[in-house]
Length: 340
Ligand code: NAD
Image (cartoon, rainbow, N blue to C red; front, side):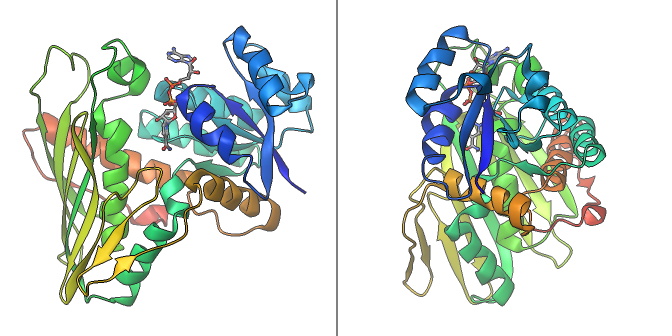
């Protein structure tokens, strides 16, 4: 069986990445859509050969509960709408994939996790890099100490935003925050899988050079993590500087990915002069197949809700550190059972 996925929100990511990837997946396919834009219904119906009964709008979405053709609802809306639609999907008895960042607060992450538990449905976060072979090679180097112990990790995740200043990503009510919410989660994740540990504390700083454009949300944030074994990580995330890199400095060498988290191909190299190379496959196809295998075959959920929540705890600690002038914030992430 292939799982039927319904995409909620047919913006850029659904149109250019997820829907085309669903033509390459082995364990799931695009079965339906949920859109607030009437004109998109016909266009998507035609392009992806969708059945009329699998097309919903935001108002009639809850009736998806009665539709056996839809197994999974994938929420691809602005961040502040994730919680509402994930909870509605769970209540309709559908498995849920929630785009990153999982929500705009830890409280909302908890509400999503609880709704999925109460309705006995699976929950995954749209962390495509967790399914990427380069990421998993890094995890292997860290675990097997191929280059010795990781001592220091440096991560960047950013791009230069020049578009419409009214876009939802620059509107805190819709995005929950700026660069940190949007790109920062990648640098948080690379800091964690680059060391193989959850951090025990974080200190952070915010910088703004274009306050007229970034009126409502953070432009550039740097943060430093400490880890229990003495390792340290530094991250930079920005809507005003390009960055797409992970470098791990170890006791016997180094390895790096640059680019580290774009749609691919990812590129990597190591201190022994080798390049890290894997055949290109769409990360989104790998990610959705991994989730489908979790639902169908009970394989590991590699990006569970608790991982999205863990990252949101760190996001909130970073904003708190900035509000307190860079004060170090202690993190207790052990109870979540997530280290990757
Ligand atoms: P987008 O602006 O291209 O699309 C947003 C969609 O939401 C549109 O279809 C729009 O019509 C709809 N929408 C409904 N209510 C809206 C409102 N009040 N304001 C604005 N749009 C509204 O955004 P996107 O790039 O597709 O991002 C959607 C989600 O996907 C975000 O959570 C984003 O972080 C995530 N995303 C993830 C990745 C990834 O690599 N995993 C990449 C891009 C985006």
